[in-house]
Length: 238
Image 1 (cartoon, helix red, strand yellow):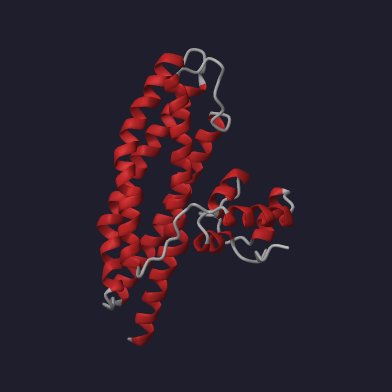
Image 2 (cartoon, helix red, strand yellow; image 1 turned 90 degrees about the vertical axis):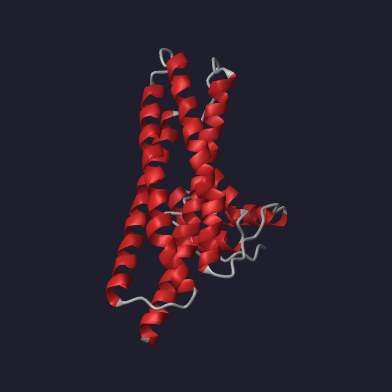
């Protein structure tokens, strides 16, 4: 019998063992924006047998080839988010946007859904660019101050908490757009007439979705709660 506790939340399971993310992705279980559900509750809602899923998670853990993340502080985690996710997005989004536009131009007549895919992706890319810039300019510097042990005034603490709520709302909106793109492409299914560019577009869109889920998980379920813990501790001491 597996030792995975079904009463653990999806977010805490992935935080402890990042390899679980792949299993949750394959099952359509949201561990980032909806990661506060327990494994048992998530399986029940999805009509999955929790013991079967626990077995699959154990197998994923035993064959884990994903590096564990052990950040010493929230500033180090913020730096990791920038280097592992933000920098990648700045490079990938324009290139992928050009590819989406090309595929729609060439195949749009036979696949009219591609027009909606391009429109959704265009809005998604613009929103993600603004979002990561705002995090780096407004949120992460304050996170660095907290990590250095600096205390924040009441007004600044309130602004930080409001910023976190706004970023979490942005994450939920991003997840909705990614879900819409997945629906429009029938789960990134490759049509029979797909050329190499079409196939590449679908593969890169799917990888963008998976990377964004992990990106959001690190912020919503690790960085933001740890920042709140330090913020609350500083407020209590004051």
